[in-house]
Image 1 (tube, rainbow, N blue to C red):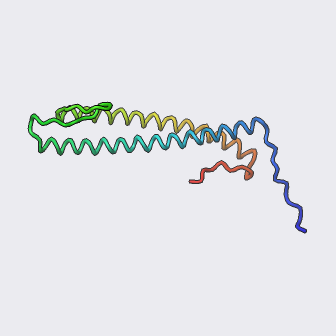
Image 2 (image 1 turned 60 degrees about the vertical axis):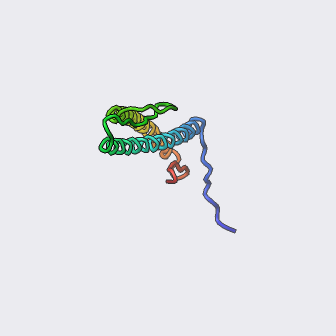
Image 3 (image 1 turned 135 degrees about the vertical axis):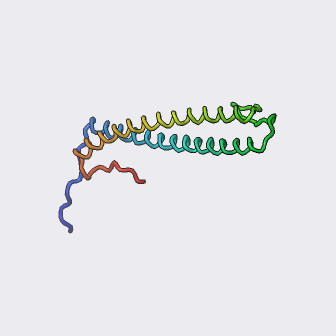
Length: 133
């Protein structure tokens, strides 16, 4: 027969369970923000590529040539300078959206850090709040 095992049962109060649940929700929110950030960064790259394509088109096009530009579900024909302006406006909008996502992520990270501090102080090794990245 083996020796007595250490009692690993840890009492979890309602308040502690609420903090654990809140941490889980914040962690999920952080994952969603990371996904949103990847999508926006991909959109920025697409807009940079589009800018290069429009510049290349401008070098080879005649003065009257127009570029199809998608607005919603339709395409309109615009001159290259107008398209460049529209692309830059969209790029500025996406960069602002990225800033907002990063601010939200910082806020979530702060809440998670506070919760981690409290929960690890109370439960030590009996709880694992680290992501499996």
